[in-house]
Image 1: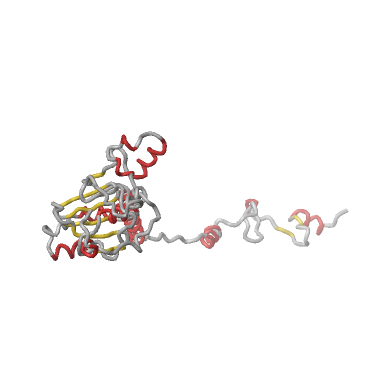
Image 2: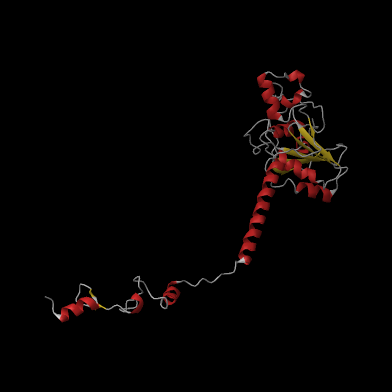
Length: 282
């Protein structure tokens, strides 16, 4: 039979299994610790815990200065790229207003392929001389070539080319030697000494001096102030400041599609003029 003390213990609480007795408080709440009836934190302590664990976020302003700077740089870069593409495309097009003698063909390379493929014969060309490259003095050293246009822009020529390393001659040179230079990819700038004075000659010479694959000489009775020639093409003008002179030179000097004899040199050529040779032009 249980004693009164044991009976009281049974009725007043439950053992926790660890020797402690948990007393029941009013309304079934547990008085031990700070827990609620479900074993969680009390309502009064929950907000404080939440405040401790929550990070405070500060909204940063956007760096509009950097954004606008990089946007501006991007626009400028795109503009430069576009300009470069245009320049490359523009330089791939021949200058407007020039006279070319290739007929329906664009340049020397194109007409040469047409001949090789049998699409056309030399006699069928509008100007057969654009593909004629014989050294006529090979058998007759005294032979002088004849040309259909003045100054000539291609055709059969003499075996010696005129030096064309940015060479400026103060007297006329032989047509046949100059045409050989054109075959090597040079541009020949000529002027009428009756129409261009000393200052004008200096201005033209500045376009040639020090520029490889170019040469310049007076051409008496030319009838126009300036005439520039490359193989198969020509441009003439009475304005020595005409920007197309420079455009012509930029485009045709060593133009891969318009060089009749690729990889040929412009140095070690003839440096004498007709005044030195005491010979008529021809």
